[in-house]
Length: 260
Image 1 (cartoon, rainbow, N blue to C red):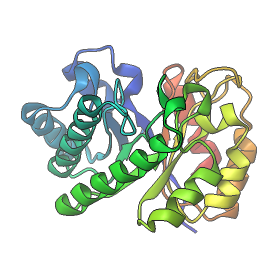
Image 2: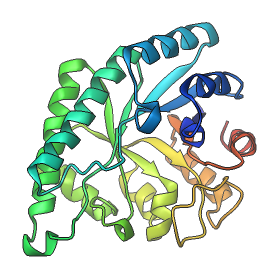
Image 3: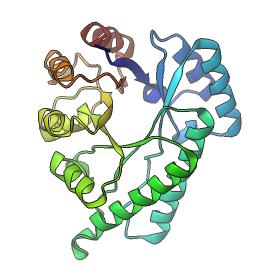
Image 4: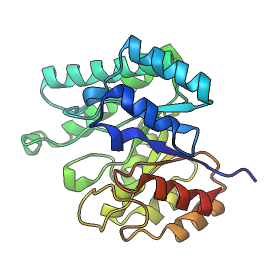
């Protein structure tokens, strides 16, 4: 049986110059890398060329995380909504240019005025994802949507909401299981049990259940030995991306020992 590919998100280098981040990723003990198209690492044609040259030289495969800072695809404010969709659609084009295996994006979130428009956030979230999917089909890019915690006002934070989304849309969009986010909801096991056929990508970090801390996978209350058993049970053989901002090499060593 094939094993998962364990890789690393370059989130932990987001504060570094882009060129330094690229050099850092070539020194990691993995050829599976997730790039962030956000902040000071927003992609440009020059940066995409550098990444492609680096991938060819070092045998690296990429996934791409769409922008998420100040992005809300369920916003009731049209200017915010349109800008959010524009940024994600541009990231789909970047994923195509980069030959990325997958584009990860976030669902929408409630706002301070959501209480005045019951159900409107969910409806707009669904319509926005349909629009994102249409763009992904145009460019031949595989996309997947990540679970986010309700404590930060996000939609699609439980298996029930993902099942509702799939029932309403029947879209062939995969799910990114973020273990840190699921841990904040006490939902790791329910997500794996109920969404096994939809999970095509996993983000691995750890927290103590109080906040999305992105600790190394040995510094929190997620039982990664039990997680490895879950993955073997569902025959998961896709990517597990370490999304820690601390102890990244140590986390990579631990997960490779557990999963590969």
